Length: 242
Length: 242
DNA sequence: GCTCAGAATTGGCTTGACCAATATCCGAGA
DNA sequence: TCTCGGATATTGGTCAAGCCAATTCTGAGC
Image: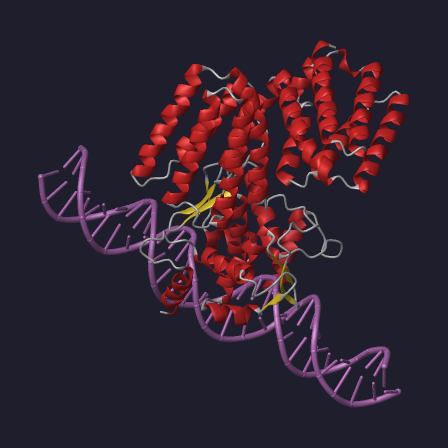
């Protein structure tokens, strides 16, 4: 009884409906709620959140469920829980304490990709073969079809970046590029991802990919580097800001 | 009552005493327990863990506490929880850059390091703090002493590259740099290494490191990039050709 | 004004229960 | 004998209420 009530409240506040959103676990929804409270500036860094009992009641959920969400946020590094004292918002910038390398920030992940793939594509341009360019164009073609069909061309995206990396002829770098790409879909990252995967954002991403291929066709290393760097930084922004 | 019993059991199994170990939260201790069960091979990737109720009883803790630990492990990507089905062990999450293939090609490994660290040091130069430069000089100083004493300043070498990587302020990139460095000491790589580690070659490497620091002191990104790239390619040559 | 003990607050953890999703089993029908 | 479908058991998801422990607050006594 109370449960359905709570979910309804949460979904309404999040702008989701029960029907379309795949039923995420309650603690994830609660974590989103609390995160948005913080991001909304209602609780600035250093501030203390309401007590667990109160916050649970305020969100219409039970205390154990709230606690699960708080643990998730604690692992992310968004809050700090001090026994007997309260729940405190940490500064969004990475806490000095570190240690928890688990909380890899999406920002840093995309920065790393931008740095590595930008440098890589310079070498790849020099070694670029006609075959590879055709492959890239074919990937883009499939990407267009997927978008038109309302699907997410995630796999094509991966192939695109991997094909370029492989063209540089260094298996170590290619593996790093692949791993960094896949990292975006780790459980951690999935959770943080907002509603960034709209059809519109994929269209924009498609155009950025096309710009990269154009530079490659022209055998222009610097243009390719600029296009790739621009794509990955923009992609990171979309990912985070929705 | 039951609670103290549980903590005692856990601490005994973990080899900790209540007195000396700062009392970590229970869910963290439980997560460690489960993690060790998995690492011990008792539950290989893909295997299903006991049900929550059973596992909780087995570890001597309550179900909510166990659930908190499972959520932490789920976020880490160590396990997957499927509603109504069970808790499954995921393939051990790989570090961002690792894997057996890395060590198999020393040439490519050093090329990758050259590309990444060269790009990285450009950003690091901009963010370089006086403290870090002093740290680097201190590392070089120790390096000189080690060489003079006839030892191999391997650890100082590692610290040097890591300190620069960390200065760029990106944990993901820093981790990659560290992993690539360590990769050189994999069994495979060790075997390939020739006479590389003569005192003379270490002296040359020391001078290359000094050139990097000089460029950093001058706040000259391009010079730093050139020095780092030159160092790593030369280092790769020495490693292979002896 | 300061100190310190006790009360109030707050997180930590447990017990017990019910709901919902999934898996399993077993019998009816082909 | 095999297959299919539904009843049943298993398993995760969530809630309610309560007690313990750490911290903070309060006020009496100095």
